[in-house]
Each structure stands twice: as C-alpha cells, then as structure tokens.
Image: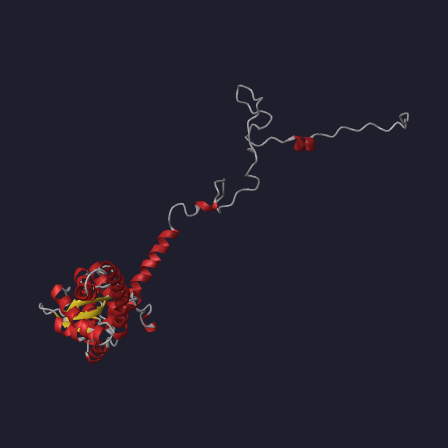
Length: 331
C-alpha cells in the first residue's frame, strides 16, 4: 500500500499496480492498437496508390502518430486513465494526489511511451518499473502519475474475523441497549478492514472504538484483552442475541400451530377424535318429535342418546321360540 498525502494532509491508501499486471495491460493495448493500425494502413495504401512516394511517406508518418500515439492519449484522457487493457486488468492511471488525470498527463505518458515501450520493446519501461518503489516508469515520473489497482478482491476486506474462542459467551450479561447504530457500523467497518490498515493506525482505531463502546455500555473492558478481540467478541454477542430474538419471534408467530390441525376439529393436544372426520353428528333430534318439544325416539328426555336398534334389541325381553312338533315339511 502506498502512502500518498494530498494537499489537505489526507493520507491515501492506494495499491500500486505490479509489473506483471501492467505488462499484461500494455500487451492488450498494443494488440488492439496494432490491429487498428494495420487495418488503417491497408486502407490508406489502397487509397494512396496513385500518389507519389513522398506523399505516401507523409501519410504513413501521420497514420503512425495518430493511431499508435494519438489514439492511446485520447483514450486515457476521455476515460480518465482507463484504457482497454487497464480496464480488463482492473488498473487505472491517477495523479500523485489520487485525482483523475488530464490531457497533459496523458500526453506526457504517451510521448514517453513511444521511447520506453515502442522503440525499446518495453525494456526501458520494465527496468524503470522494477527500480521504482511504486512501480512507475519514466513517463509516470515526468507526468506525475501512478498506476494503481482499482479492482480489489472483496473477500479480503469484507470478512469479519471471529472472536477468540476463550472470549465466546463472556459478554452474555453485557447491556448493549445504549450502543448507537453509528458505533456498531463503525466497529463492523473497522473489523472487516483491520487487516488492510497500518499497524499503528489499526491499534489507535481499536483503542478509540473500544473506549467508545465501554462508555456506552458502562462496563470496563477485561484486563489483558486486546481491543480488537474485545470488539469482535462484543459484536459476536450482539449477533447471537439478534439471532435468538429472531428465532423466538418466528416460533411464537400467530398461526404457527394451526398448520398441525388441518382444519378439522381437534382436542387440546391437536389430534382429532376418532371417527370425527367424515362421520355424521352423533346427537340429533328426531324428525318425528312432537310440537311440544318432547324428546323423540332419537333423544331421551334427559338429553341422553336413545338406544339404537342394536341396543333396543339387547334390552327387550326375548320372545319364547315355538317348541318343536316333530313335523317335517314335505320335501
């Protein structure tokens, strides 16, 4: 990471591009530029076949300057430092103070690139980039520019480190209700980017955030615990509380137990009575009941269920069967 200081005394943490990525970007740009130059040269050769040798030479020099020199300068100026190769490799040309480049920066880089890259086949540019602490070639030094890595993998900075195992559950009794959301956001941003910070800056930020967290909770931090580990453990405790609260709210949501009933009559335990589904009501008033409201044959006067045919047959006195006479019917 490069420490660049702007005019407002702001330190910029920029990642200078390495030589392999810059070489790949230049190779892509050269392939595209030479392909365009070849097509334009063939077209001009056909168009200027009737001209003399001096005119053909002048057209060739103008084509070389416009395509191989002017086109990269125009592309970098219009795209603010992102040519086709740099766009593919995730690079960008910026000023020393981190701002976007202008036409004069692109002009100096393009003019020096003719000598560094085209005439010396990239040897001078490679040597200058290896010698420079920030990987700059001679054109970057004269123009006051720097090629940086604009595309940084998100997995490096967006993963929050877990707390140490010996701190898990240690802050379960800590009151976190007074901690504002802005402080939680600052702590999360610090924890996700703590590995990218300078060690001195990392320590100072951890101490400051831990002090703010202690002031909000009213409980001092444990002795001997690093500030970053303390912040990670408290954030982990808050996430665990949020997860338990969300799980409890989902379990106590209205209608959560209705899915077990299935829409039929159920008892206290949620199970339907035997024969309840698909059967007729057990107690009904008989159709032949009198107008005075007396109970009919189906219901007794006490409201109990009248005995059915099988029960009536069991309670009635059995009739005596006739005695055998010994007479056999004719066959």
